[in-house]
Image 1 (cartoon, rainbow, N blue to C red):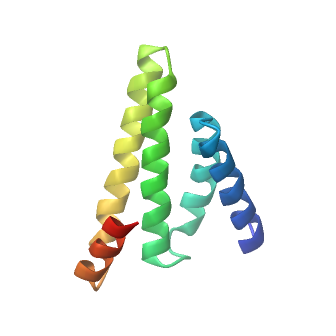
Image 2: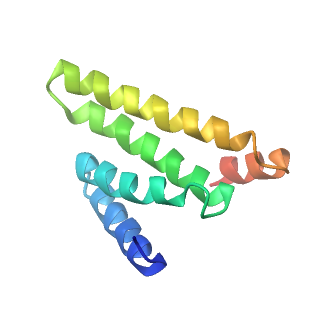
Length: 104
C-alpha cells in the first residue's frame, strides 16, 4: 500500500520523466498512482491524474517504432480518457470543473 507521501514522490518522479520526454517511464509511474486514487482521492484529483496518464500514453505512442506497441499505447490513452469521462459523470459542479480544466 502506498502512502500519500510515496504517491507524491511517484508523481514528482513522473513529472521529471515527462519533462525529459521519457514518456514510457512516465506512463508506468502515473499508472501506479492513478489506480490507487480510485475511490480514495477526490474525483477531481483522480480525473486530473487520468488526464495526465492519457496524455503520457499518447506521447509514448509517438516515440515507439513497433506498430503493435503504437496501437497499444493509443488504446491505453483511450481507456484513460474514457475513465475521465466516467468520473466526470460523478462531478456535481460540472460547469465549474470544466472551466478549471480549460484554464489548466
